[in-house]
Amino acid sequence: MNKTDDLETKDSPRWHSKIKVDSKITLAVIDMQRLFLTDKKSPWCEPKLLSIVPNIEKLIKIIGIKNVIFTRFMPPTNWQQEKGSWRTYYHINKKITRCVLGTPALNIVDELLSYISNRSEIANRKKSASVFTAGSFHSKIKKRSTKYLIFTGIETDYCVLSSVLDAIHLGYHVIVVMDACASSKKNGQKNARGIFERFPEQLWITSTKRLVKQLQNHSRR
Image: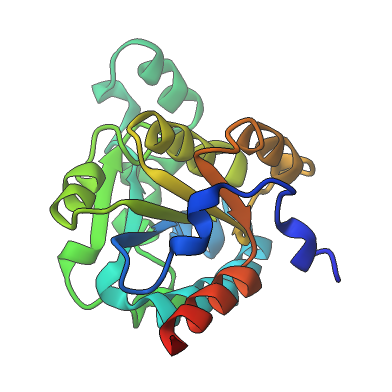
């Protein structure tokens, strides 16, 4: 068994074996945007994180695009329009505001664009690290009667982590596909995993290979 296969926790939640393609599942692809991955003008650009794209594609293909939501982080036009601590935050990080970086940088990376056919598959949000705050994500998954929420994307120890914790608190059965998530920080994956492991009844930590295998096995029955 290699390291990727060994991503499964020793005590997976009992419900994980019930998941199948026709379950009430939503695959969340978090912030796979140009400003984080390909736009060299962005101080937050980390091209190495593109390595997770093939695994995300595998999951999209088996789960089905109708069960996928892409999220986008939308910084303000300029830092002056913000208030409180966000004003300070965007003053320090003004190079990622829209008036400096431009709106094309907010688009999903080209490698995943072919999977987006309409706006209902994209949920935008402002400010918050969590996809559940200040955006349309939660209303979209409620309309789909989502029960199982699968997380992929970036960054594992920031936006993915914040979103996962909110999902747990809201009562969703949560799945984190670790090799379809990535962090720019050296210990980002490890640190986030340590927190995920605190929720063994509500969160299944797994790999792309394991999740795909389970979904394929259910589809054959």
